[in-house]
Image 1 (cartoon, rainbow over the protein chains, first blue to last red):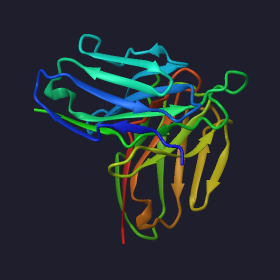
Image 2 (image 1 turned 45 degrees about the horizontal axis):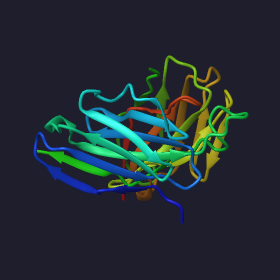
Image 3 (image 1 turned 135 degrees about the vertical axis):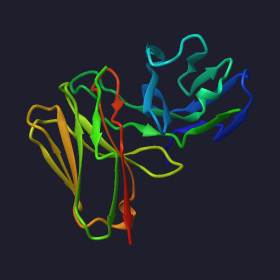
Length: 121
Length: 109
């Protein structure tokens, strides 16, 4: 059963500490998104990759956040240093975009992981 | 940035009632999607609509894409407690997928 896997599921840390969240996208998917969800802001797009190349990271605070895809099976989101306002649930999602015809793949479906709940004290 | 506004923000209804959730934008979308999210989980796709005026049915759920492809609606007939969750519309097509503000639905038995 193919699924997006995120680690850790929960993380509590102190302000100023480095936090790294990891995501294993579904094998064969060529697009990976990072979202942050809070009660106030809803689901915010932080960054996304296609074929491991970053296409847009304009939603991320550049001074403290960084996102990478070292290989096709791993996407990382790092926060350094973390702040209390970073507390949120971070979701990774993957999908398959076929560039030939439709604007968004065969079904346009994003598959989400279960999220990483981050609490920064 | 293409913004998607959803209404209502919260909805609490009795089992058996009907409801409609709206998703509106000032931008034109090549396609719109509806997701449902349950507590502690990520959103799960319900449907994708791609043609202006399109209507899709999924059991008791009816989805409509506006003629101008700027808005969409989700209608639930005879709501059940299992329909409880956060409903999110999403759009963006090829470039990036952004989500609406969400509608939190509670169906009371």
